[in-house]
Amino acid sequence: MSELASIRQFNRVVLKLSGEALRASGSQDNISPEIVGRIAREIHAARKDSDVELAIVVGGGNFWRGASASARGMDRATADYVGMLATVMNALALQAALEQEGEECIVHSAIHMQNVAEPFIRRKASRQLSRGAVVIFAAGTGSPFFSTDTTAALRASEMDADVIFKATMVDGVYDSDPKKNPDAVRYESIGFKECINQKLAVMDTTAFSLCMDNQIPIIVFDLEKEGNIQLALGRHEIGTIVH
Image (cartoon, one colour):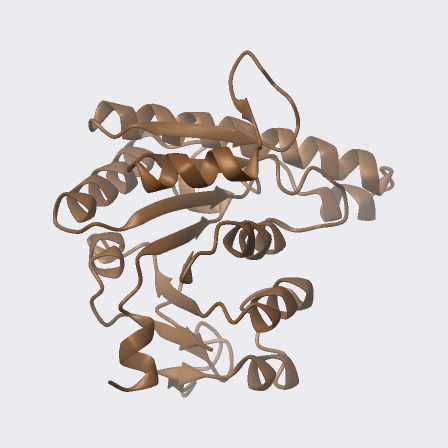
């Protein structure tokens, strides 16, 4: 079996969703119930046909971006904490949609919010994944200055995940921005060091370093195309593998 083929024989997955992915284009609503519902339906459909253990890390950019607020004069640490709270709102919305589909879903928050989420406990979260529950990791790492990409890499390392799926607005990794350059070339696979050297905006450097150190591949795919989450979790060939 080739290396790329073996990567797709995963069992435990971390799915990274951006906050912006939960907002409909042009809408004033921060969260689209229709989009969240579609994501939940695709996850449920995929899990009916496979034994994939699924953890999710969701961003908060549909509500707030700490780096942007910091650039406008707000204290960076405070701005990042606000962003962490935004990820909790997204996690709860996604939890509700998954539960409507019949999935057991548990939110772990890196900031204690005992009325709405469990505090993050590594061994407990791992056991919940093993028994088939979907676990959503909210509130980032619990510390400022770290992105939710880094959170995904950290939680994947802690959970002994086989792969990170990063859902984006493009269908893989390109040598340049395909929205600006019609001649951009998409990679089927690419190495971590190549991504860093070419400054390809897949994940931030901290997230890349964690994935490299712990040998966790990343599969980048297009979230906007309906059915892609189901294909990805169903172990079909999709997107670009960074390894």
